[in-house]
Image (cartoon, rainbow, N blue to C red; front, side):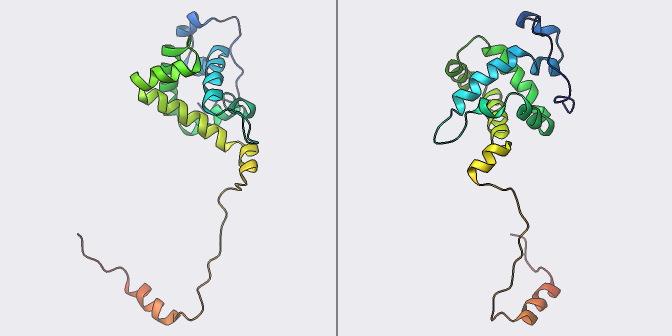
Amino acid sequence: MSEFLTQSAPAASQSTTASTDLSETDLLRSAEFRAWLTSIADHLIPAGDGMPAASDVAVTADQLGRVLNVRPDLAPHLLRAFGATMTMAAADAIDRLTGSDLDALDAITLAVAGGYYMHPDVRHLLGYTGQQPRTITIAEGIDEDMLMRVVERGPIHRDA
């Protein structure tokens, strides 16, 4: 999946019926798959309260590539969900997967939400700057010599 972002999508002339001839990576980049996932993504994360919709931050393009680079194990579940629900409306697809394939539904929600919250615009709107190093100071009035004896002693415990 690491090549996901660097290769172009297959030609639009390929139909969904020919999808069985495509590799997993090509199918994930196909226009049919992206249109299906965009519909579901916008159903799961619509625009509102100053936040963009999932499609506004490219969760089915660059962001999906980022998610699949980290979690390539989601790809088979996404493709299985696509095969089972590609002709359905987003709400109907989610309902069907809820009743029949929770692993595929989990893969969709993880890929969509993960891509959405990794996007820099969403992080900025939320005020999340990422993990930052912090310096901790010992409070006044604590005897550091006493703490050092505990550190030097090492852990003492009994297995429960």
